[in-house]
Length: 376
Figure (cartoon, one colour):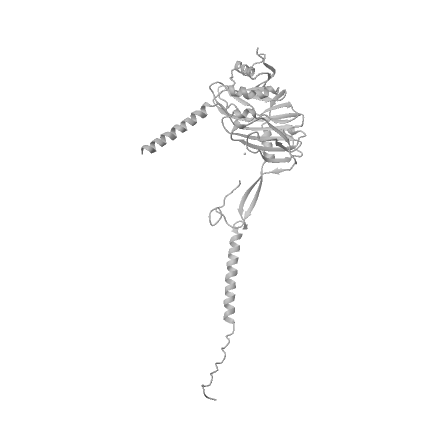
């Protein structure tokens, strides 16, 4: 009994330790950029979906975030290779993308009954969705633009030193973690800029929660890049759900430390009806949908660079519904086959028995008795 109680106590302590550790670690990183809550508060990105459109000269990124936490506002830092413009995106864009990339549903039949078929069971569907102020006295940061977009206060800025960016954020009520400061250094070395965004709900009394309006960034770029480096600071596994609109099918140059990227859709969209998807796509009508998991975010080694795939091979996922092969709505073909085989067997046996009864009886040959020995 003592050993059992000790084991239960140890398990409880471990669970409490895991919960305390999870609560104490803020979610600084999401798939694209870094989220910074107020000191002493928490904010977590629970879902993130991004769409990219690239025509060889200009890149557009539309991001939709869902948040949870106890912070009433948060700062979000997004590194970009060139000066960016920002506007609100249309939420209907992602509904259109989901519809375009939806799996094809097909039915396939099996002959013999399985576990969910009669006589073993019933039918089952086995189908396999306060604003940031302007420039400060810090010479390392230069604010190049500021605007209010719905729930976002957006400041576009350059930074020659990650420390300067940290000081600028601090002046505006946010603390940049040391790990994030170091992670930003490669972007500074490459001369990138930042889009700093203050996320705040319409009701200042409520914490950040739920799905935010999409944010649409546009910047010049001669290569298709999706910033992922900051995700190496994430405290938990990350999932990338990325839609890429370009002239051809696109693919990541490498896995950058995650699982092998999985293409869930690839195809030419052709003529699109008027709407947010057509507006974003423009003349770039080839859509590639990519999913990827990062089970160990600390192994992320850089940003996703995407290149043209070797072939524009279309692809769509197929979800199969397995059904028992039947005649009409209810009669299994296997049962007909078995009954037919039994009927044929019984009929053959009866015919053989009937033929046997009708066959004439041949009398035995006469028996010849040999003469006694010694007689002529």
